[in-house]
Length: 134
Image 1 (cartoon, one colour):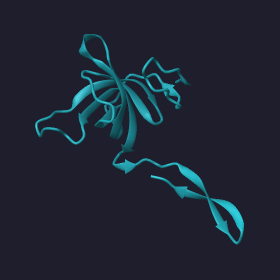
Image 2 (cartoon, one colour):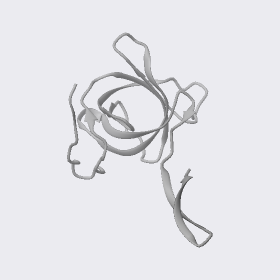
Image 3 (cartoon, one colour):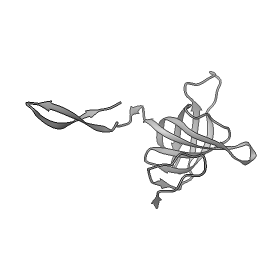
């Protein structure tokens, strides 16, 4: 398994995380579901990184849209089950689309947030104290 950073294609935001080229089955639905009768659709990963997925989809999705996703391993078990935001989407041949998704939550849990330093003045001495951001 080789991870390597790649340059972005035209119109696609540059990713900072390294990608792993892998094809896996992804079940997805819009979140929240638009219709009670709406079934989950099938897509395929083109690549994965620690924070997101590159997908080949049967339909175009809108940037900013939320998707409930389940990524299946080769044995059919779910390796990722969570909520993702569409970062970008481009139409491809045959009416399909490619999209980049950012994973927001996995297995119902909120992802860890970055810790940012903040200056605190105490007894005339400035020091940096971590603060949680949301």
